[in-house]
Amino acid sequence: MSNEKIPYKIYLEESEMPKEWYNVRADMKNKPAPLLNPGTLQPMTAEELAPVFCDELVKQELDDTTPYIEIPEEIRDFYKMYRPSPLVRAYCLEKKLGTPAKIYYKFEGNNTSGSHKLNSAIAQAYYAKKQGLKGVTTETGAGQWGTALSMACSYFDLDCKVYMVKVSYEQKPFRREVMRTYGASVTPSPSTETEIGKKILADHPGTTGSLGCAISEAVEVATKSEGYRYVLGSVLNQVLLHQSVIGLETKAALDKIGEKADIIIGCAGGGSNLGGLISPFVGQMLRGEEDYRIIAVEPASCPSFTRGKYAYDFCDTGMVCPLAKMYTLGSGFIPAPNHAGGLRYHGMSSTLSQLYDDGLIEATSVKQTEVFEAAEYFARVEGILPAPESSHAIKVAIDEAKKCIETGEEKTIVFGLTGTGYFDMFAYEKFHDGVMDDYIPTDAEIAESLSKLPKVD
Image (cartoon, rainbow, N blue to C red):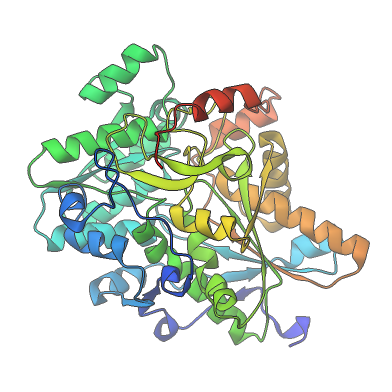
């Protein structure tokens, strides 16, 4: 199909929306390593996970053989409020760069929460309501997940308790207030409300917090509160499953215009956006049907893929959660407080970690100021103010498009625009005022954190 016939925005019809989530683990020959009970070091059973997660979500978490799982009609009806989301041809960016590459981005910011997180939030809230629970607890970093979950819980009339990384709680007050508008309680983490929070504050006075800290607190509250369960916005297999609607729609839209991606790029924190975007494409690679170059982009200040170790580690700083085998910086690793976006988790999804270890995806890390330079450039050219997280992918997409200028190759680049940055203006202000810097952890700091990994044979 010629460029002239490809519209700026490629929409699927409502009837073309996915009716099933795709479980990439079913096609993986090397399955992700199982979650381990930290006491026995044996694989976690459904019975052991049931006090923490909703029953149906436990089934999805442990299922690595079913390729397609039906999306309940009530969830699909909710998706219709903002899905299918558009696949956008970045004509203006291509022209500004002078690249022969074709650039597309899957835009997930066209809902009130402002990000892709709502895809899993509504699913997890649905299963909690179906189980008859009173409410859920969770953590949030930059606040996108907490915002999405507060919306989903409001829709299903569930109580929502959010533990927000303290530095984000202070830097992103508007995101916090959106959560409260939807009825959630929002607590800066670590807090004095939990035993784990008190211990972390005692051990690390003045800490600005981390996702690992907030997870510990949320899990403690869930397990001690009758009628509550814990839900997570990234990392877990169930979350990547729900987010597969992103990749399924992306592939369907590309097929609709007769286009094939050469390079697929996504930002990487815990893995929800990246895993959701790439799952159906990786599935093709695993089945030997197609080949793609897939790039995970992470912040240089929290580089779990590029500088972490592939090992079993605690999923949380308080060391109360199961052990997961993943690329990790150590559960005690806390990103510098000047890290402006999300992507703060100390580890990476076990599924993505296995794919990375098998060489099916590659990873790179980028500095924060370079990310915001790319974000500003994109905003001025394409007219969308991107979230800092998304801007990691934008940075590398621009770099790859510039390489095509040098080589003359007409590659097709697809990246995930996970959300908008309108609640991230404090970070943009720091960038524009020239007070944002590029803290990168030293080898010694990472080694010190990794030295505390649990001993697992």
